Image (tube, rainbow, N blue to C red; front, side, top):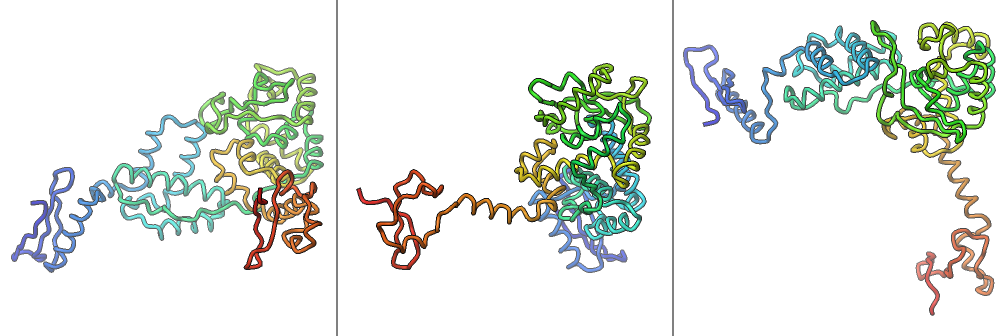
Length: 402
């Protein structure tokens, strides 16, 4: 017997439903009415039959405790990523830390987004925090602590357009001129390649083929609190990529190498020959920004700038994804989709150019002797097609009779 109802007249709640879980342990719950006990027991047995049953005790773990456990188990992630996880955990703990996993709801998580936004966090910061929360809950589902994740279907904040500072080529040049000579090439390379900060700071001369103008991203500078900086692998597998350098980047790097020979193979170093650190470089950066393009502007804006230039040039999103090293084309669309507005009109204009001087299907109504094959029509060039109206006055293409 998998489940049964026990009547206990001497108890305040007389009806007790009991069943055995998948682990062989007995579970029970008491009710005032027999029908309520039967309904509850029936629901548990259905979950067992469908494979949806989870141990309710496992879901009573507070979210903060489970999140800490998950961080400790993810030993394969980079130091920088682990630091991001810790920061996201710290922001979420005051809001949901004490709540058991099986008590979290979609409505409650939407409230977390609202509370973080009201606290003044940027939309990207809020989104990162909620991605960590979603990751923990998805793992809790795989661990069979909860049946489904309440984070499924929640709309994450998207960065406001004001969060991105997009520069034009002239502004990038002004910014480069305002930088100290040692770092003058940095804005040019960053804006015309779209490399991340770590990829720029960890860029090695050996990964640049000046003859073929190819740059391969194989290393990234990893910085984390309490840990010395070191070279490691890029952010994701997709981040390991090879891109072709525009001539302006190759020429700029050539001048840089002549004036500042690489130290330990690094393209950019401090005056002492050490790694380019975010903290020390930010002081140089802010001064140059103030003297050229004005605030706000951070190094990552040059990556956004590269994306905006590629979009303006009409490049395919897949090309943009590959060049920026995004893990998927969805990441590219989520991040820069709002910059692609108006491309549909441009596509229509290109189709008009493709059609050229072709007058359209209506030309079939003219004198048949004038319906000769037009070499100017790219859609019919080289094909022995003839058009004629059918009985519905729609037009179709048919092969001529042989």
